[in-house]
Length: 74
Image (tube, rainbow, N blue to C red; front, side, top):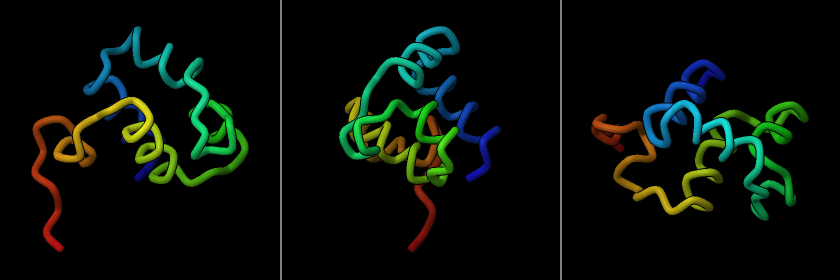
């Protein structure tokens, strides 16, 4: 996952304005008590940040691959 894909996934899931709040203010234990934005700035893999954000904010697993997109085949 690229950073641009992360930003689009956040906007699709939360909306642009609230997405900025979620990534900038929500402290996620799974990311060593950092926000998504801080974790990304400190080099945590984008996909890891996205999945941690999904788990922390209660996004249903069926949407972890993007709103309206089917989960990839195993």
